[in-house]
Image (cartoon, rainbow, N blue to C red; front, side, top):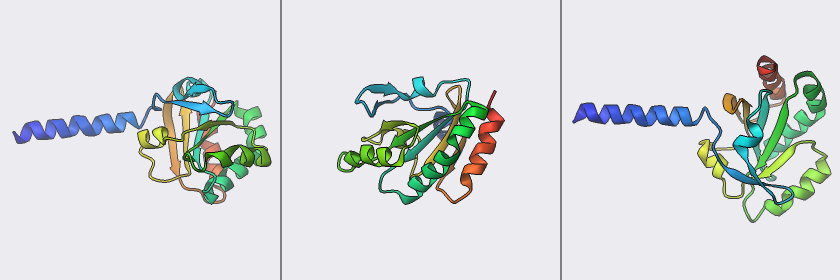
Length: 161
């Protein structure tokens, strides 16, 4: 009986670890109210940065602003793409479009109003930044401190073609 318990525990924990290495198969909405499958947009030979953020999250905004300042150079050098997924709920999602228009971010913005992605990734907080290549999560970082974008870029370079 105990042996079966440990076998089930091992299988369950290894499945959880494996699930966190892949992006969840979730359909989100873009700013044009079109459905977008996350796995489809992030399955690329080039690195893709996925940033979970919210309008009410100051560290999220600081991180996306910092990346915005260097994003064009990053794209030129590594062909990286950034997908910013707002986890604002139905009460605060109306703030997303005015905010991104004011910021002038040149990112693909997706909406996760039900927190499906956040839940599937086991994200307790935002910002959560992922680096994905060929649909696999190769780097994961929670929170933001000034300069963290430099560490992220080191990883982007590591996984660029």
